[in-house]
Length: 71
Image 1 (cartoon, rainbow, N blue to C red):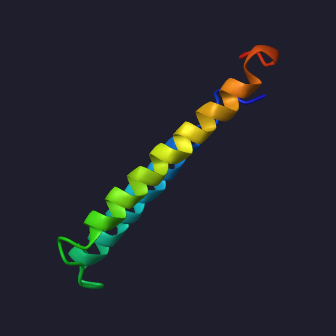
Image 2: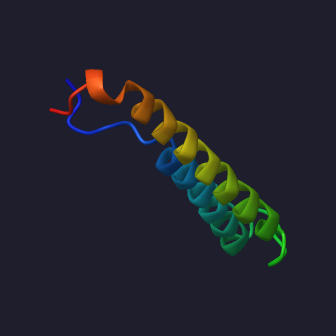
Image 3: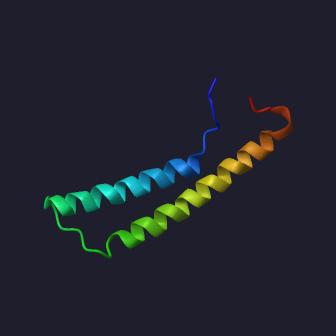
């Protein structure tokens, strides 16, 4: 039995922010060149996708609602 509910929006947001961190860390080490403005579309698109995933997840939980109890 899981200790907490699965929250897909937070998962997507975490993956996006981790990807941005890895890209900037690679740039700091000199492995590749990342322009400062390159991650803006990644962050905006990823956070919008996270919001959408969160709304869909909440809708699914709300539909299950009365028949499903939290532990």
